[in-house]
Image (tube, rainbow, N blue to C red):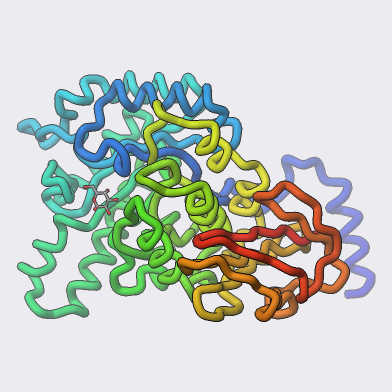
Length: 399
Ligand code: GLA
């Protein structure tokens, strides 16, 4: 055996690349890092039109968002029309030419996403995919769709009708419905990112990857206010171990730039989503982008934490009152570290300390304040921090 190993090695080295076994030429993982893009729902809701989506694609390019990594342009609910006699789904009058739209979006170096659900109707009561899964998947592929958000809503009616009061059976129906659309997408042969949207029911993080999900919503819908963002961040405690390359927890789309969120709140929202290795789907009105909002959305150092190739989501390592500390290990051996004041008052952290050891920070690592774009050198637990209400200190520690 000892002699055989060097002999085999020598043989392997002398082989031309094409002779490598097929298994060694692995296919790229879909959503190897959390998907990034924009989605129509948070801002346009049911009013979105084809022209809005085109304009969003243009603005993603001109604002620098595309070059920062935002590539999926996702149409949410309300694009759907009616089925014809052969069951083929048509778009409604707001989306006269989906193939043309896909071509346009692709010509900008972007990808197009679409929305449906396993029920007869979507959440907004438009036509969904029940009984037409393969037909719809084939249609998406023929248009050139790259991403599908599949929303439970209408299927709940069927769950109640077919298995009244039987939660276990209903849960199984839900899993089967998601697996069915996944199989249909695979059969098209087109790589289509598959986003499960069922609000975290039945602890979806435990089975989302098994039914083919590249991401799954962990909670109910995000709203454009800080309590909603804080609630979602807290609902994701303990879920980090279920996420990884190709399969992500989705704490819902970004509200950065929406409502009355302050700069600190926008940064905490974006920074917390980056810590959570969350899909970054901007949900704001891109025609009204301010330099401040663009700055938050396109901060390269924050995005680098979100997109870190190790794909390890942050976990909460410490809490005291409204103050929380989260950390995640990074591919380069460093650590992303966040300390957040979810409370309403300014907080001085001298008494609390940074809890660097619990956060996995090794002595001597160099700290960089990410939002402040400032090197801090080697900081210790007694480093003095003051956080305003809803403010975060986001630090990248490097070896
Ligand atoms: C649900 C989803 C939202 C959005 C709407 C559309 O509420 O959770 O993200 O897709 O449906 O109707």
